[in-house]
Image (cartoon, rainbow, N blue to C red; front, side, top):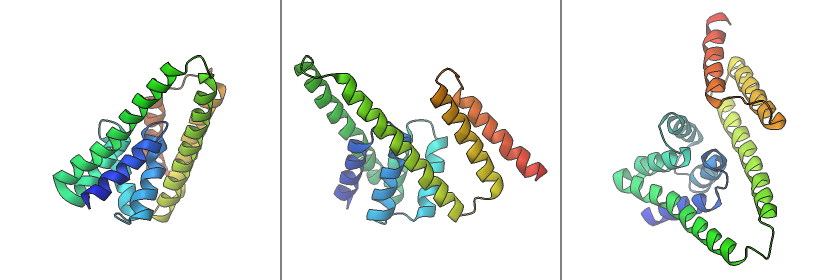
Length: 183
């Protein structure tokens, strides 16, 4: 079972272009839907804990899930799996870029990766929203979610507006407190 856990997180790490948030839907597919090691509710709890814990969200999630399933050994195995595959992939990518740097445009590859990351982020956001609705997201939470997504998307689309992520998080927290006091 530990080997299966390692392989699952190795696969997640291999395909998790764009960082931790882009990997959330991959982790959900593998852990919740394929292996059924966690319920959707447990997975949402893992994501919440992983977000507030210092460090990369995918590594935090792997460590937490591994520990929850198999204790300390599981935490080490899952964390190793999610870290090892990107290290190998980056090493291979660097070797290929150095060897073939004059034969193809790196920009085309980077643009393709950027599109993939955007799709993974949208998918992760929608899946988390769907799960949250299923487990008690009310209209106030939904309004906050929409406002934060609008702020972040305006920031991405305009590129000129530099919205600091910590300010968006503070705004979301403030709106959550305000909505719960007023509404």
